[in-house]
Amino acid sequence: MSLRRTAGRTARVARSLTAASLGLACLAMTGCAGEGAPVERPPYAMAKADLGMQADSTTFTEFPTAPTDPAPGGLTEGVVLRVQADVAVHQSPGGPVIAKLPAKQLNNPTWVPVIAEQGRWAQVLLPSRPNGATGWVLEDDQVERARTPYVVDVEIDARRLTVRRDGAVIGEWVVGVGAADSPTPRGRTYIMAAIEETVTKFSPIILPLGIHSNTFSTYGGGPGTVALHGWPDPSVFGQASSDGCVRVPDDALRLLAKLPLGTLVHLR
Image (cartoon, rainbow, N blue to C red; front, side, top):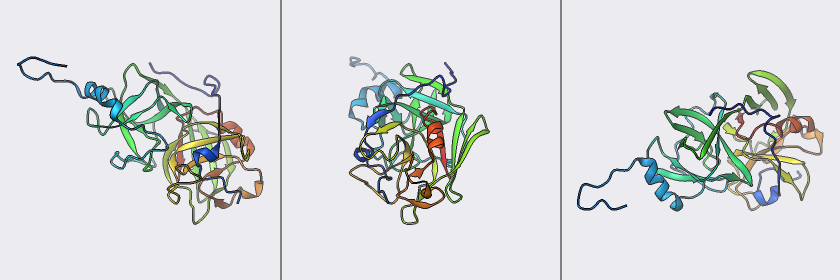
């Protein structure tokens, strides 16, 4: 069932978590068959049986053997999948199970972008380390299919963020990016969650991405997740001074916070 999710039709409530507890890299204010032949089961049936033994694919976990993104600078068709219950993540279509994708990420519903398809199998970007980790999921009755028309482009060197809808520019801003010793990572990622910052309040909404700092293996007790977020001092816009996150002006944040989860983000 192919749907078209737009910002107006897909209202999302930001969850009350703290960026500090997440450890965002952005907080420094600087069966038996008898005796006959064995019963053959399709790979996905075995995956369901083994699912309880698999680790969750979240921003807190790492899967070094996961397939890497084959086209980190490539576009997609905008297809996103909503995981409504834990689903198996495979190394390849019908291949070994390497993880499970839970129904929630940081108390938000799990939406992941599709980067390739083979029949009922979809290759998706994962929120886990290493950056560019992917896996294959079976589109069954536990998975909802939709489409987002939006793409976010961050030109790191030019320190510019652009939002497009169906290819047309609907917003463009000068932003702040990672400093030389803590650069913003590059690659294809996505908006993983929306959370309300309740402690430092340097940004009313924080948008964690499915990508991590390459400088910090951990940050503030968390996994070093990179995010899009606001900043109280506008002098940082146009500067490379963050710990890896992308700092955006207030009007940019208001638009970004309305985009559907799973929206593709290019960090170039």
